[in-house]
Amino acid sequence: MNILLLGSGGREHALAWKLAQSRLLSRPEDKFYAAPGNPGIADHAECIELDATNHHEVIRFCEEKQIGLVAIGPEAPLVDGLADSLRSVGIAVFGPSKAASQLEGSKGFTKDLCERAGIPTAGYVRTASLAEATAALDRFSPPYVLKADGLAAGKGVVIAQTRPEAAEALTDMYSGRFGEAGAEVVIEEFMEGEEASFFALTDGATILPFGTAQDHKRVGDGDTGPNTGGMGAYSPAPVLDATLHGEVIEKIVAPTVKTLADEGMPYSGVLYAGLMLTREGPKLIEYNVRLGDPECQVLMMRLESDLGELMLACAESSLGACEPVKMARDTALTVVMAAKGYPGTPEKGGAIDLGDAEAEGAKVFHAGTGRGEDGGLVASGGRVLNVTATGANVTEAQKAAYAAVDRIDFPSGFCRRDIGWREVERERD
Ligand code: AMP
Ligand code: GLY
Image (cartoon, rainbow, N blue to C red; front, side, top):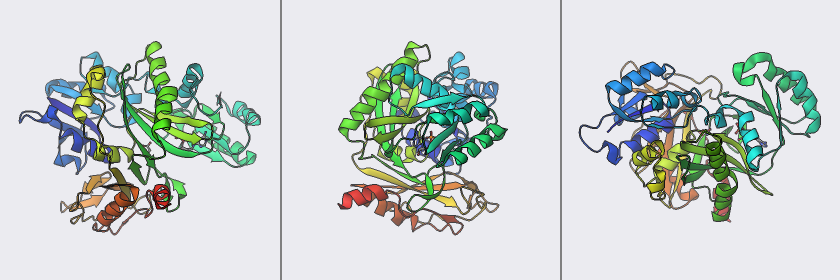
């Protein structure tokens, strides 16, 4: 069959790498396209220009190339309803509808759904004006968690330590800085605990667990400095032991999938639950309607099942006929190499020599890479490379990943040197 993958980051490179191994693409005539892709994805797929915000253009391409499956990587096209447009003309899509994508597109939507379905999460208030929000602070105690309702590229959450700081942040959020995304602000109770991510595939009826991971959001070693899209991750997350894993499915994921189906917006695709493991048990922080970046890279490194077949089964509502997802027992760990300046203004155009980084079984997924004038690999974004390796545990995977990092020559890049530190400490004890 012919497949189209949308996206251009490290997440999509990992998906492209795995999709290229799918039985769906095993015949010589099967074509694999990516839009826009990146130099790493170009090893697996034909990269093409396609404006994902122009649904007619995407449909026209799919019809012309007889695309049998569209896999949507990032959230923006999902929240924008691209999956609905494609489905309306009979094209199979991996990714939820616009209605179901509100799980990521609107914090308020998700909080209300949790309340209706009795899903454990932080207490909250939705506000629609600065006056309302400022008054609502009375109902909370510090630290205050303030969230722009809509998509804000990971920058819409403020944790304010004091009331004046919270009031100032609210003024800023209601000043229009987040555009549409900031038209509403959700104020939440602060939850204490360790964070972990849980992934599940679903077609709206069947739920197949798709692995767990932990991410490192801060830019600096020891979890210091500003927040980023993620500086590294590992999978599985041992903190989500079998008991917690069962609890997350039973109390969080299953009621979400059921409630959405009951309310006429069945979820199809991958559901990514960001969790806080609190003393009272796991609670939902937020949902994403796509795979995590860089969590996807470590999941794909462990995935033994056929990704294309799983995606198609989600798209065709036949996940019930699939075997449980198989993942290697090994741990996979990825280190993000970013361009200096990230998450502020990253240096562009820095030369990269990957050398023999992949010599010992590591994989280097491309995120923000491009080709320089001489055709050489250069940095073209904030997060540039995802250096990924496996090992018997986090300590071993970490060693293998940094050995690969050290074989890469990228003078204008940097990375954290402590990805996996929590688990490495626990493994030492
Ligand atoms: P979100 O974009 O909703 O995932 O929030 C970004 C980050 O803010 C999360 O990864 C948490 O570290 C933190 N966070 C969000 N909501 C809460 C909360 N209610 N309590 C504590 N920390 C939170
Ligand atoms: N790494 C966090 C995310 O993809 O949202």
